[in-house]
Length: 361
Image (cartoon, rainbow, N blue to C red; front, side, top):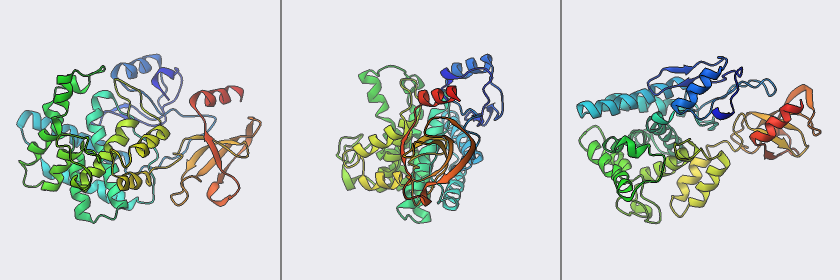
């Protein structure tokens, strides 16, 4: 739920962390006006709230919360070390990437269900972690071996390292950039390549991810206007993951796009700005109806998605809470749409519709 819509008395359903691993709010905490004001002040845009009507459910993530937090902390520490000591501990970053690869290989049947919540000042670090996870998942789908996944994972996690040389005021500017500011932003791929080439432990291919992740399939990208197969395949994957995660994130200058909007934009960019094979591979890992989505069935019943089926992504498991007459059921039950050929989802409900339903119950 958006922070602006929060009310005192609501209960937090999922803990919120900062990029240095500190918990802002624990799961189960009751919100006060003071907490809500603080969340707004530090830039948190949305929070998972416990829902008494639709009930609790377990959201399986492709990578554990502990791994996400630890990787985000490693990224924050790496940027700080680079800024102060002009050096990176590549071995620690590599170990972190290996952990992500191992978890993704173990959880390869789990689909992407959600985007994590982050504060604006944490964006660069959380974004790098998400891009790494998305890129490695895409590489697994495309049949990459472990060495390729390691190169892809390391390069994707460090793809934005060049931003260390760009002013934070430019990176977080809420309004339009001046021409000079935009030109400075466009230098970060070259900065990143220059930084990574100083480390023998980073392969040339991993370094080229930083260099090429803003190149575009049709040659309209930067810094070298490469096109098609001239862009390395790792960088083409990271370009898709980079855009996907950026669209889903809340930014100082715009709210996040919905999942449906994000997928529509990616499909429109496919074959123009992005490699179609990479777009298809990434999207194949995204749940069409993520866990927690409130949906209406062709029977008129309304419920919430509580699990997904990788083999039938448009046919998840739905907990039915309201009947076709929009009356709340006393006998809430779950249906697995993959086993019901005549029952299907017709649409997902927006926040206003959901709140209206709750008001009637």
